[in-house]
Length: 458
Ligand SMILES: *Cc1c(COP(=O)(O)O)cnc(C)c1O
Image 1 (cartoon, rainbow, N blue to C red):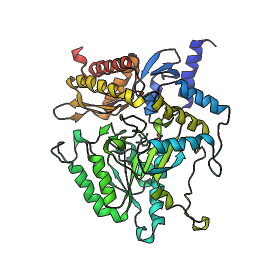
Image 2: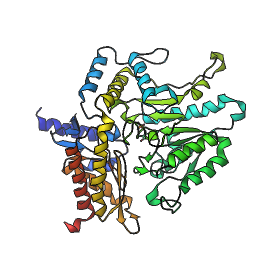
Image 3: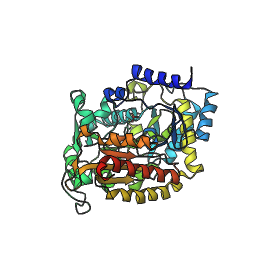
Image 4: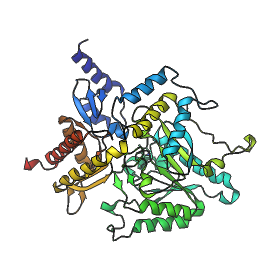
């Protein structure tokens, strides 16, 4: 079969058999699918051999680039030993080595690693552990069964993680299936629900959180939060001091704090974990996405001794954590994660990232002049550009205008892959991106936003 025929066949088969995630399949079937076959560094290469810059790290996971030699080698070496063996009743070498590495880089106090295979499962585990912790801690805590979470939160797609989610577009329809949670305001400064302006607001949203936490503490097991950046809601960056305040409130009112670092972890915000920006030590931390550098599905829920000890006891006491996914601690995935974490030190990834973050900040400023760029949010290498119909009134584009989708389609023509969140253009390149590549990425984004939102000016 010649190349062209082969490619047509792939396009046809995709449309025939695959149901794509978070995708209206009617739209998908109307278009020719873009099919990726290879990658190298910051680039993705499609079946026709066309190269694209990977502007969203293949959905927020790629850290050191595609086909990174050290990670490739680590996975191949592990393949020659064993691909999978269970952690239920057995252990394996890469899972052990990785657990020590994770605890060494994690915020202080976290001391045990519970593996799973996606961000959603890492969050489910965190929620179940927090719940069970209080049930086993003592009869006086039996009522601590509920969760507090934030509006605009995204913690994954399984039912537990959707229960603590707060994005109506994704979550509304499942309401009858979900357990009740208490919601607190989202620190979304551009559209502050309390109609305040930072810093004059003195973090009134945190005061509001305080009133909720104080009132509900006796019935609440934990508060779950995406530290510093609410990612899927459109890269909403919390004002300085907010996270620290939330941590203080959790401690004061005796509820656990779960940090969902699934998106923010592994350098994405400029530090290894976002909690570090404010010296916050969570009781439970969920990590996934960047853990294997974008190679294989792996996740972990890290906890303190205090949590772990509440599950520790005689077999007959049934304090066991009865939870475990089949691929928990998969050796291949753990081998990739070890290599990825080692690269942070070997390549001084975080140090080298700092000038790139500054460069990004500088170039993003140029976008402020565009007529439909309402807000630009950045924390490290997590960027959200919120487009609005009217800058003065902040009137949003309607969903059906598909403004984000139009812009990312335009970007493809220029050789850049990005994926929007509604009216927000997300930029999250691999940490290893070169300055020249970053320059090109930002130039393309500028051109495409202008071309799509100000067509008359062309
Ligand atoms: C992506 C994400 C998840 C879910 O991770 P999956 O691997 O897609 O299940 C959970 N929390 C946050 C903050 C995320 O960004």
